[in-house]
Length: 212
Image 1 (tube, rainbow, N blue to C red):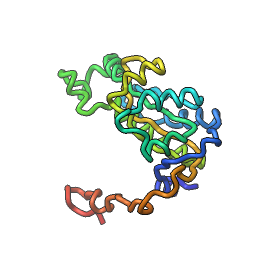
Image 2 (image 1 turned 90 degrees about the vertical axis):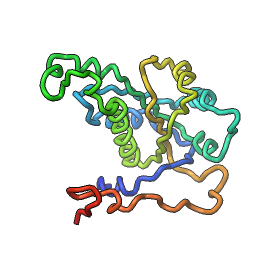
Image 3 (image 1 turned 90 degrees about the horizontal axis):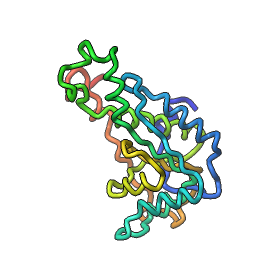
Image 4 (image 1 turned 45 degrees about the horizontal axis):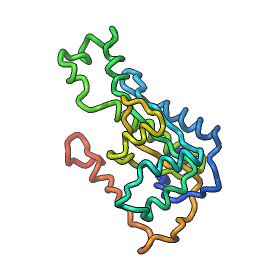
């Protein structure tokens, strides 16, 4: 499939076939492709934790569960995923890289160290790695759904999987073969597309000017 078709055809998958595991070789390739993403100064401040053993998957959902919320439709669907990839960023990788001689002079090295990072590129770059992971999954015919690790459960996830304290969870991705939701079709049918029209997003030369 051509890249434009992969991009336009990609959709979030929220229910998977739990009896169809993702082969380890495919998981390794997905992560390998994800780590070809660009990063500031080639800092590569990302780590990708793959969970595909039943015990590890059960542990993840157990430590991130909100007892007050219960198991809703979203969770019942996502728990069917035979693999999860947790993408973590490490800020110090960027601080260390930009402390080296080739990054401590010139326009890209302002006197105010905090001014080097107007946005947290360790998160941005890890997000780009996740985007490549999603496209690679689509290339392999897999469904995927990115979602956040609950902020209140981050420490529990770190403890459950021996994640160092200097890593920050940027995104989790559920992976697997798409399958009907265990609860059946969603009430009310498929959700309408919420994608913003191109001319609302694209600005030509000046904000608010159409590019034709």
